[in-house]
Each structure stands twice: as structure tokens, then as C-alpha cells.
Image (cartoon, rainbow, N blue to C red; front, side, top):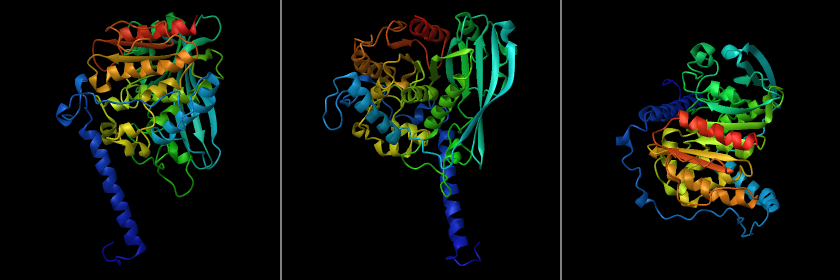
Length: 429
């Protein structure tokens, strides 16, 4: 390389490749540095957890369009304001999904079926969702558990999962008292008449993808493009798109009532859950557990994790346009109460933890409270009080549900029971 002319195309290409390599190494190093962000307080000495230090902020109005038009009816909300808000989220936060250069073929393949799962309580199906064009393909493993002995198709939860659906984490052999080793109470779901489904968050895109060379993105891009444009989908949007393809499958499965499917997720996948439900109205209900920044928590509070912290650790979870608002959250034409509002009139449940200060439980509740304005426009019961409810008290009989409980960043038995109670109230009544 050094013996060639410095002006040669080869030399220029090598320099470009080296520069890209150094950039990728630098970005890859950041998540490793901050991999235990919740414990590494020395790296977060600039993070605010003090409610008295929350800056003054004014939230964007839900019922006033950018040109000042008042949105006074459901029709205007659905035809004018809601599409405006979703477009802003697509282009400024999560990234829009481009139209693929060539049509995609999507097929569902039953890999195996076990009708005697958990001593006959349920049927397990392993489904491969194969997405392809004439150049390449990606496969997502979708697990579907349906309760046996129920009358008609069962309502179900569809979880954005951190557990690899191709692993043995879901085998009946690792069940203990009706729970998987990760704590998922499958037995309780089956006893209450629910199915349970799971998609793995890394099947279509890496957890902290920075190159997108092996992700679902490559099936969408024309020759010459290998990386998302500034307004195009990042990791969270790709995961949301995968859950929508899982819903496509559920529409073909006679054991699951696809009109009564609750989409849910925790942490990063709680963020993904809200974006999935806002876009795809086929999901009947949404549950976001400790979703925090880019999930339920309000950007403008700048409490706990902020946009700056997120793009430092996980630069491509959001689209690159989001970077423009680092330390400039007040310039965003949206805030997260508007994302929850876009799920209306379908029920939404938000879960926080007292010790999960990184996710800003107070900001999560306020987002749900302010989103309630749209639920009330539909005539639905929602949150009436700006003050957060007492710790351990769940708001169930409302189209906007919420609880905060003692403890940190996890889904505990108390949480699962409240999620099921919320689903019972809305999907079975």
C-alpha cells in the first residue's frame, strides 16, 4: 500500500477503510466502557436524580397542530394530528422504515410443535419467519405458546425478548413451579387462559449494531447503500418491525386470538414496545416496563438517562437525526407523552421501580398522565391526577394503567400479576 502513489484509487480506498475501521472500533468501545451503566456511577456524575433540580419545561401540545389549528374531535386527531406526530417520531427519533428496493418475500415455517408442553398445559410452536429477496435473507425465530383446553382462540402476550428464542431458555425442562429460569410465569399465563409469544431482539439486528452489514437493513437498501440515512431506522425500529411480522403470523394461527394480543417489553424492549404499538394498531394493548429514556419518560425532564447518555452508549438505537437534539431536548417538537397518546384508544400500561432512577419513574408517570388527554377525548377512563400514585398501588381499571413498586430494574412477580390483571380487565370484559 505504501509503495503506491498517494493519489491512487487503491490508496484512497484503503484510507477510507481504515478511517471507517477506527470509527467502528471507537463506537464499539463505548458500550463496553459503559456496559454496566446502572452501577458505574463514576461515569455518570453529571446525571440528575434530584427532583428539585428538574429544569422548567413546556410540553408540546397534543391538540394543537404545528400551524396552530385546534384539534377538537377524534376525527381531526386521527386524520391530522396523530399522523403528524407519528411522522415526527419516524423522522426524528426512531427512524422511518424505507421502502425495500426489491419486494420482500415473507414465509412462515413450522420448525417443531409440542402439544404436551408443561405436562399438557399448553402447545408450543417454534416458527421461523423467513424474510428474503433475491439477494439475501434473514430468519427470526418466533415462539408461540397457546393454552390447551380453552374454548376458542386464546388472548396472548407477545414479548420483545432478551432471551434467545433458539436457546433452551424456553424448554419445559427448565421450568420451576411454572416459571422459566428467567422468571417468566408461563404457568400463570396458561392458568389464566393466555397464550405467550416471544421474539428475540437480536434476530434481525444486533443489540448495539453499528455497521448494519448483517442486519435486516441490507434487504431494504439499493446497491451502493449499506448504512441507514439520518432519518432511517435504527435498532429499535428494526425490532419493532420484527414484532409486526410476528403479528402477521398470529393472524394465521387459529390457537391465538390475534385481535386480543398485548405487546410488552422491558427496558430497551419497553421502548420498542411503545413504538411498535403506536405504529401497528393490530396490537390490542401495550405494556412498557421501566422503559425510561426514549420509552415512557419525558425527554425534557433530563432526569436519569438522557438523550446524550443514550447516543453515547447506544449510538444507533435511534436514528441519527435524534443526535441533533442532544442537550437541546426543548427543541424537539414532540415528547414521549405524545407517543403514548398515539396508542389511544387502545389501553397502555406503564411500570416503574423506586430504585430504577435511571429510567425516571416520575417522568414515566407524567408521560402517562399527559397522554391521558387523548384517551379522555375518546371518552375513556384515564389518569386524573398529576401526583404519582403510592408505591405498590396499581391503577388497573383505566385505559392508562400504571404502578411503581419497591426495587430496581427488573420484572418481578408483583409486576407480572398486575400486567395480567390489566389484561384481564381490558381483554376479557
